[in-house]
Length: 458
Image 1 (cartoon, rainbow, N blue to C red):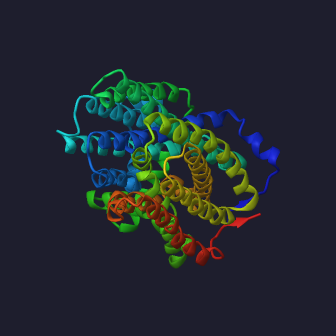
Image 2: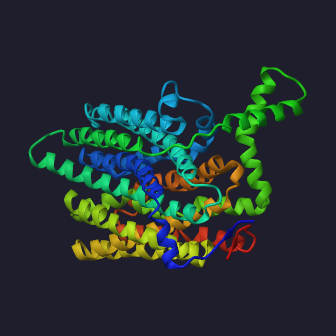
């Protein structure tokens, strides 16, 4: 049974000044930045190159790889990168390898045209998504390993700082992307997006330099424990050969975490948890996937989007992520999840007002700020919720599994967002109302299982 101890306001915020929080902030930024590349940057690049809303929406299917990264999470735990692992550590070695892959992809994007090579552009975007989803596994593991198992206050603060870092990488990366693209466009560079991707590549290099200042704890018994588990399973199989070794390896690394999750919660409650996790952020994802297209169609420039959606959004996200972390600790994660769902639905309706009243910078700023507040609050509550559910024996894999299921709902279903807008004949107001309604099924799931969850909050 996991207990959450309430803290005073001063106690909670004092934990944020631990130097490890700065490392976790950087790790979060490294994790969030690639979403700029395959999200708003790719969407606007394709939009300004003449592709339809539906095509842009379906291109977002590349995000689906985030829903399945748990499948190769055990490999990340066990396989070492030649040279890099010995030089900079197991976790950092994997992150640097994935960052190098992203850097190569940005270089390739800088020399191709989506009108002539759409399939290649999407394929490269898919490689970026795979690299990003893979590094997320390692980033989460390295984040957790920064803090001791019994440091509950630091773990809660670390979750909030990870969210702040993610949104910082995403929002500030978006600011750099949009302002750079607009600058190159204004000075007459034809392939301004291609040139922008080279600048974004420089950001990737700077993040890798910063990564070298993140301490990686040395684990001397991780491989030993993994091998002991494999050997135990192999002994139960009763023979020693290649086949039993493969079965033992697969059972120990993949089957164990899944069996543990269902055993701990019970089959029906476990299904309820998975249903909630899958459905919770679908409405937010539908809005997020089409938001930059909506801003463009209603008449806002890339600079406007950068200022209101990225810069102001980042500031409010940072503030309300920290406040959200405080609320989760003091009021309990279940109450926080219900409030987060209501906030997400309510703020989505602000975009309906913007769509029906027309271009208004005041209403635009109001809608974006409150939407970012709701998103920040929901993300902190969600991270805390799934963190409380995982078995410490299988922390990395179970966290990756639950996070991937949550991503599956946001990516697979939200890929039809552009098609939905087209089906509504471009009625953005109705579209945003539907995104608000989408949160209801997840809250019903949570209401059904809330009293049976094995979480004790004091």
